[in-house]
Length: 158
Image (spheres, rainbow, N blue to C red):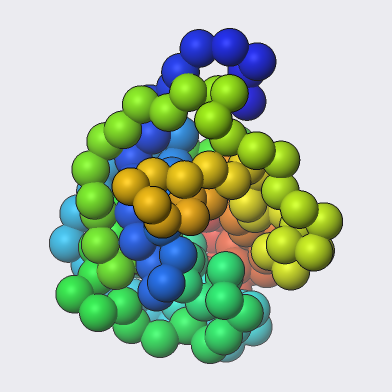
């Protein structure tokens, strides 16, 4: 995060987590699309969906952060993100809206949470009395998983 000023974020909820996604990485939000499961994927990867003619991996944000199995979200929405490898879709329970957050209000992640969340949570803050996790979308899906998903589909994902 920059040392001064504020940034715009899309706020989402996944299970008990309230998360902030940098708005400049968000392409769009949408209703859930059909998902094709991928056998060799980690537990938090629900599979692959076709988004605007391009296949994209679908990550259950709740499962990723909680360490559980990827189950359909309650009500669920998809959020399409721009990442260096192409497009990544995260499945969330709810899209809460947009918010500007001051960089000074966000704290470094405590080491115990950093280890548990495997680097997905970049900063922590508070919003309306609730813990807010600021995510780095480019780190949500490891490169080796991108490669494995591309091989199982028989083509490159983008």
